[in-house]
Length: 227
Figure 1 (cartoon, one colour):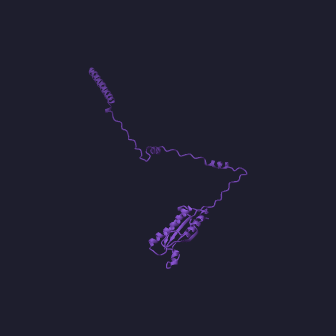
Figure 2 (cartoon, rainbow, N blue to C red):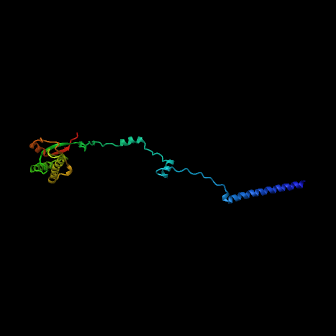
Figure 3 (cartoon, rainbow, N blue to C red):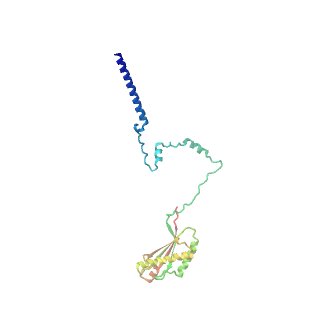
């Protein structure tokens, strides 16, 4: 009876050893074979925010720079107190300047010349008209302030409107060209316009009135003073 129990104890001991050896063998095979090892799960990283400046802006949002430190405002009165005027020195007086006329200031007429007459249908300057323009050139050479010139061409009521507009423009252009050629007056200082027969100076029903209407008027303008 006791012999059988001993045999059973030895058998159970042997089976336990074999089971332990088997478990250890399985563990060693799993360690040697990475394909049988359980995979490690890695959580995907959060995508970087898509911004105009890419990764730099994303990192800047995660780690903002600290706000700048300002100086102590109590130091300002000390700096102001250190600025002193030497004894006997007088503060500088502001310069008194006359206000300049702005570019938007209107022009005013200095004087007007209404002595230029033309033959019927002609834009040629007469000898009298040239003499008047020579005196104007001499007067403008003494002008110190900036000025502008307007030349207005006129006709009598004979002819059609389109022809009178062209004739009035030719008469104004003749005076402008003479001022430039004889007096070196820049062209950009002179403007011309044609009124045709719309602004008569005399009665178009008479020869004398029509002669008065075949004319040109020269205006000398300067910017108005601004107070």
